[in-house]
Image (tube, rainbow, N blue to C red; front, side, top):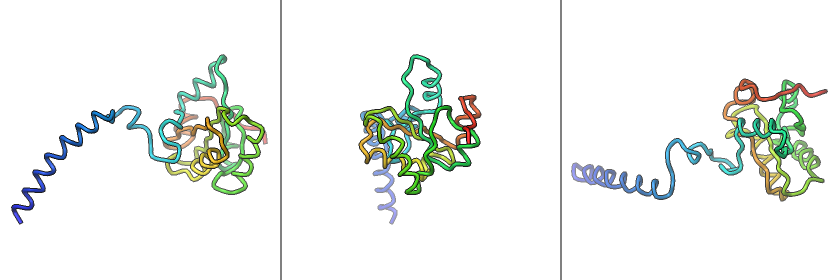
Amino acid sequence: MLRSNTVRRVRALVSLPLLLAIALLTGCRAGGPAAEAPAGPWGGARLVQPAELAAQLADSAAAKPLLLHVGVAALYRQGAIPNSRYVGPASEARGIDAMLAAVKDEPKDRDIVIYCGCCPAVHCPNMKAAFAAMREAGFTNVKALWIEQDFERDWASHGYPTEKPAS
């Protein structure tokens, strides 16, 4: 018993430096962009941070993405990103249908940002379903607004632009 515990400890000590070397060689590091990219159907390259989107929207020379709110109507009515379109909860078939109808005449490479904000994006059933449906429909430049907590904390409380949409 003592011998097998010792062998396990030695293996663990040998494995730790090996794992660290592999991590360094592959570019994995703590605290950088790789550490911030969450798991999910969109992957790190498909996310847009709130500050990045707000800067793009504020830049008069920048091309503006098509903004689609894929969450619940009550949340959208409380405050939304200006010029965004409400399409409904993408966790429901009618929301997916409305979203696809809203983009039917758009080029497949159109810059599109989907957002919800009801909960952390990593758990949001609307974001995951919307992103998957857009990719399946052939849209190649779809990004998910990375809402870490909720729309209020990650967007509105930072002073990024919001508006109460007309009913």
